Structures are given as C-alpha cells and as structure tokens.
Image (cartoon, rainbow, N blue to C red; front, side):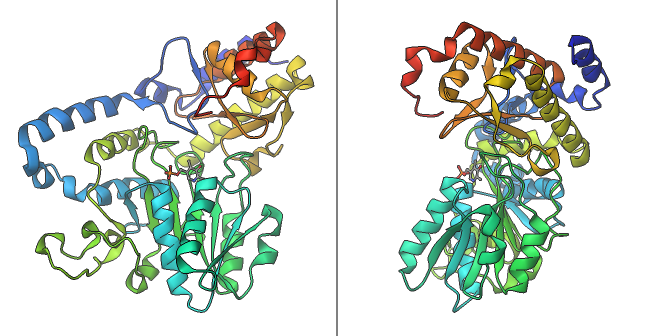
Amino acid sequence: MIDTATITAMDKEDPLAHKRAAFYLPAGKVYLDGNSLGALPLAAIERVQTTLQQQWGEDLINSWNSHGWIDMPQAVGEKIAPLIGAATGQVICCDSISVNLFKLLATALQMRPGRTTLLSVADNFPTDLYMAQGLAALQGETGCQLQQVNEADILASIDENVAVLMLSHVNFRSGYILPMQDITAAAHAAGALVIWDLAHSAGVLPVELDACDVDFAVGCGYKYLNGGPGAPAFIYAATRHHDNIQQPLSGWMGHRNPFAFDPMYVPAQGMQQFLCGTPPILAMAALDAALDVMTDISMHALRQKSIALGELFVNLVAQCELADTLQLYSPKDPQQRGSQLAWSHRAAYGLCQAWIEQGVTADFREPDILRVGFSPLYTSYGDIWDAIERLRAVIASGAHLDARWQQRHKVT
Ligand SMILES: *Cc1c(COP(=O)(O)O)cnc(C)c1O
C-alpha cells in the first residue's frame, strides 16, 4: 500500500527535485499537461525582459549583429542537439513542426525519384498527416500518395515505392514508443528514407538520432522543452544528406548570402538551408533560456523519474476504486511508453474539466481519453498523490457528469 509517507520519501530522494525551483508553478495547482505546453521557466521571464528592453528597446536593429539574433536558429539548434543524440551541425531551430515536415517530406520525395509513396500511420498526429496530404495534392496523384497503415503493419508496408516513412516516435494519444532503430534500418534496407517526429520524446527520454542512422527529424519547442506557447520547432538532418537536398520553402534566410539581395536563390550550406523567413526572436529567446535548465542533467535520469511518476500513477489507481472505472489505454510496460498515460473513461471530457476545476490540469483526447503527462523536471511525486486524491473526489461527487460538460471548449 502506497501512503503519504512513501510519497514524502520519494520526493526527498528525488535527484531532480531541485529543478522544480527553476519553474514558475501556480500555487495549489497540479500540472499534468507539460506534454502539451511545458511550464514557464523563471529564466525565460528574465531573458524575454532583457531581449525586449535592452535589445529591441535600446539597441534596435543593431541587435541582429550585436546580440547575435541572426545566429539564434543555429545556436538554439546546437543546444537541442545533445538532447536528441545529434552531433554538431545537424539541428536548427525554426518554424513549426507542420511547416518543417512539409520541407522535409518534399526534400525526401525529391531524393527518391521514381518512388511516390509517403508512408505513415493512421494514428499519427493529425497535422503530420495533413501536411503530407497537402504535399500529395500539390504533386498530383501520379506524383505522390500518402499511405496510412496501423502501427503493427509498418514494417510489412515498406516496399520499393516508398520514398519516405514519416512517423512519430511516441504516439500522442497512447504514448506508445515505436522502435526507432529497427524501423529506420528496415526502411534503409528497402531504399527508403525516414523522418521521425520527436514532439513527445525530445527533452523527456533518450533519443539517439545519429546512432540510429536517422535521416531527418522534427520536434517541438513548447512541449517538454518548455519554450512557451507557439515556441519555434526544430529540424534535424543527417550531415550525409546536406549537399544533395533542396527544400521547397526557399526563403531568404535559407539563402547562401541573404544580404547580397541576389535575385536568384542559392541555398546555404548545412542546416541554414532549412530556414525560410525571419526568425521570431522573442519566442526563440524564451526557448533558449528554457534549454539552459536542461544542460546539466542526463536524459537517463529524466527517463528514470518519468517512468517512476507513471508507475506511481498506475499503482495509485490500482489501489483504489478508480481501478473500477479507468482503463489504461497506454502500454502497460513502462519501457514501451513515453512520459504520459492515457486512460479510457466514458465521461473522459467531463472528468478532465471537473478535475481542472479542482486544480489539476490534464487534457482530453478523442474519443474517450483522459491524458496525463509527466514532466520530470518539475512534476513531483506529491503532485501525483494530490492529483489522484482530487480525481477520486471528483468521481465520488459526480462533478464529471455535470451538464456543462456536454459542450466542449475549442482547445480540449
Ligand atoms: C504537438 C505536435 C505537433 C505540433 O505541430 P506544430 O505544427 O508545431 O503545431 C506535431 N506533431 C506531433 C506528433 C505533435 O505531438
């Protein structure tokens, strides 16, 4: 039986406990949604202030040189690189995952002339599929088709017409982790390329892009990297591909010499060729400061705590009456899932909303999933205990069945 004494001891022995103080966390609340929007790092408040007042305010346009604004996409990319197992010169910070996927899908398609299939899974995050559908529409039916299969059928679906596999490392709904190394190897054996979406893995579990021989990847700045709402995303491209690719969003920041104002586009070398327009400096400054919180910790330590938080949640559910109503939709084996748990419940939306009213933030995903995310940098074991106690109170009171929850918010 787990009790509050166990929880207190777990928090006391937690080697990452001190990191919680690096974040602003609203008093009395439990935040289990860092997988959708990471919490606010205190360092980001100060950095954005400085960027606004001293840099933009005082130094104005000179800041592009004097404060290194122009090099921020590369500099921030280099801070992300060690978190995802990438050697230097292969990661750049820019745009959103959606836009970056478009660049990479088009690039990959061009690298495999004669092959026209983009292979993905039907349960991939919708924007990934939408971007592939948009590219397919642009290329015309004979130029490109998106094939969506089940996770279990990926390997069997790789044939000689597949130009590229586009897969999410961690499934956004179930948390299921796809075997990156095996799938990448199988794709390469069949002559196909792979793009991995690291939205739910970058910054929370060990990712080894170089060691897995990955071609391309994208990831998110506002989830486990805590870069703030709408923070810019990132692209990884293996060095071996840099000299024989052409991405289609050929904006001036990706030009070899943007300030030559040459009427002809000539791509930059290396990762700069993936840039398009002017970088959002305020947003990038917040992300840059947020990344500093992670420089002195290992992904393995994060992973260990993430698994312990998830297992604690599972075990607390199992030892009370919640076990009768909540069904685990995520893999049971913690090694097979990311830093989140999905629970099926008939009234999952109401449950989520009533829980939020009790100060616990989680989210709802179609069709009946209550999703909780664990951010080992700032989620404590005490948070999990409090969250479970408040969930029990919600169900006991019937607050989740309130008629108000018939109507859903725009963002669930
Ligand atoms: C969150 C998420 C995205 C978000 O894409 P943006 O274009 O950056 O908003 C994309 N893919 C996956 C798998 C995600 O979880």
